[in-house]
Image (cartoon, rainbow, N blue to C red):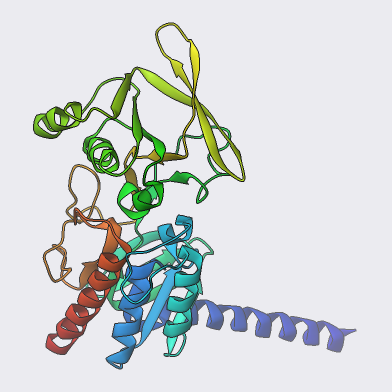
Length: 331
């Protein structure tokens, strides 16, 4: 009985030691570069860093980012037409040809340590450390949260008029939003679409010069104080039900596409408080992807770069990785 008890105790001790070893291994792993985000910026940053013989860990909840919401991409050099999913798969397969450690998890906290390195605490309880960090987590689009929106995303519902607008040449579209991006989208779409409805919930909050330009377009109809209620369709979007906020009257707009231009929310809630961002929460970087914190870089839609495009994000990821490499050579 005594022997069995000792064996049991010994077994528990060994298990406890193993758990501690594994826990500390998770904490103490040090990568040259930690990449947060698996969109085009993060994937290309990982690729370029790995090609510089740096140890790379990519942390993301998914691969592809906002690109996965795009039904068709026609402005990525080398592809006359490719779906967002297909392009994401090609990018991922390319990255996996290199020794990149891919971790599927969300980031809870990013800490800048006293020795200049960084610690990332994950939502699965593990931690990773890196000599440098490249934040490429992008933005999440503000959604309408109405029936039909998710069902027809990529089939008439889009969050980027610049990306998907050309598919609606000579068609009728609705744009939801009242800020600069919505007004600019309305102007852009008026040049190729037959009819453009602009739904503004309360008031227009955009630069006067572009608002004036918008009102000069005869095929743009502005619906002030209207809110979207429901998106209808048959395989693709066929109409949008909207409601007047004042008299609650509902009308049906027969449209081929709905562009949600209500802005985006940067995925950066985990950042150290001393990281400088703009009023939109976007990380302010220089042309090399540097932030105000040494060793911390950013690329893609999470930054204050005005133009949010797949090819631009990928390019910024490459720049940030090369800048991180230069930083490591000097530190």
